[in-house]
Image (tube, rainbow, N blue to C red):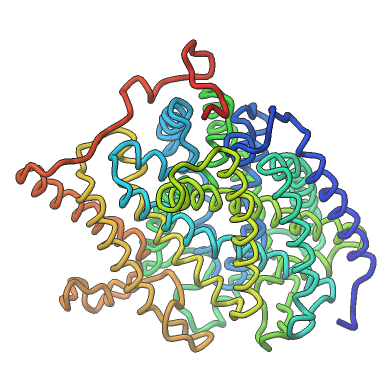
Length: 547
């Protein structure tokens, strides 16, 4: 804590305080008659237009972890880290039509969460509970990862103490975040997202123009990176993919694309939109962020050329690879610009963390509290419960950082992706058909979840000596079906979440066929075909914040 970089810290603090003011002001911005309703507090009144939604979704999907971890992965492994680029390109065409249907049916029935939709579609509290719990559990480590990104910036500025003192700045930042999210709901991150995105675009565009010129040009950057990877023992590291990691790259990209809009925070931003036309325009415009993401990933190669060394985390004694990009900015830019860059990453942590905590709180309130604990809860009681739950979720995420090795919380993100993928049949496919039986969906969820976790548990990480949950690359040699190894001897790698999803779908189909033959009831569908096509100007549309 002795070597504090005061110019960067002062600029960071000023910009952080500025967005804090915006967070509190947001409660009056586009305000409805009351914030004591989930439609208003948790979904911003369901009236965000194209620009607000674009910034909100961008702030929601492109997180601080993305800004530090994608280039850090490129820094450490090379081309595999580029999987984030095709994943964010293919995701928008994939989710365009399902997002429109989800918005319409949710607007028609007042659904606030994906579990609300599943409850209405199948009349099954059990299936809805599984979807809600999955969403909450998958979101918690995602919030913790925002803290990892924020801490990497604080650590680079010299706030790198050991024990609770080292985490104090982070704790203060999240107390402030918790207070203005409690007061303003979804409007706070929506308003702050404007500032965050403008800062990010400014920093990245300057970085990719200035840094290559300073470091000898892109040809020299790529040659230096390849030379570094040639000197490492791993045969899969390099600026080009190898025969062993191409399948991992493809399945990780596709699996991540399928998972992204299943996360409750992604759907929260969609449901906050004013109408279907807003969603259409955003699905067309959001790939602009993919350009920025590609440029961000290249910062990993620039860090290699600049001979950046990760900062040692004083709390664990281990190098923190997430400090690679902040270290690059700190070493190559003037202090004042580095301060702006650090603020962009730090604010980029707060926006998604706020949206994620709101989404998790909505799930708790609607699908656990109201379903099982207080069926007659009023809209005001629901809003109060959601506000309290959002506080608990945030500080639960802080607990990951305080009491668990941060590297472990990063590993948990791999679990989050595998978990949320298992809700695809019940949430996404069910937007189009009820052919899959509710008991088939439950059985598929159990198998996909169980096998996915078993596969992740068996992946070691030789770099840090961890025997379990060490990564997301499963060699086909280790793929086991009840002890049978169909790809024995193969070093080709695959994303376990993708394998688990296939198992989920196969089991769901088999159990559905059996359930239909046995004529087991598939529950009651409270939706109508017309509900999936309603739009903002329909005459008989359900009013926002209706009881």
